[in-house]
Image (cartoon, rainbow, N blue to C red; front, side, top):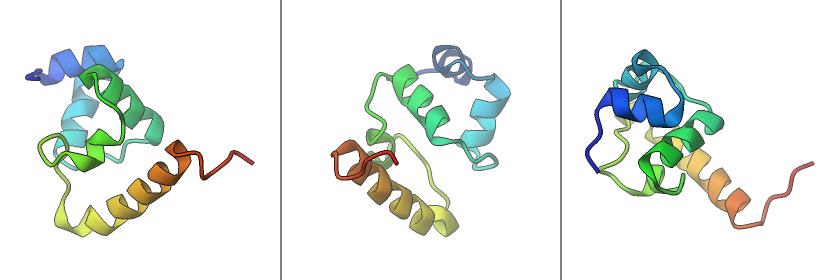
Length: 83
C-alpha cells in the first residue's frame, strides 16, 4: 500500500508532523499510536515489527524493538494478562 504521510496521518488520527518524526526516527510512538498506525495501514500491529518494508528501525534501537515485540507477542497471544 502506497500512502503519503498526509494520508497515513489522517487514517491514524495523527498529525502529519508526528508521522514524519516517527518515520525519521525522531519520535517514540506509544503502543496506542503504533496501533493507530497499523489500523491506518490496514494491518495487524505485529506486522509493523515483522515486515522489514513497513517500519524502518535505526540500528541502535533494534534490541529495544525486539524486546517490545516479544512483550507484544506474549500479550496478543494471551500469555500475558492485565493486572
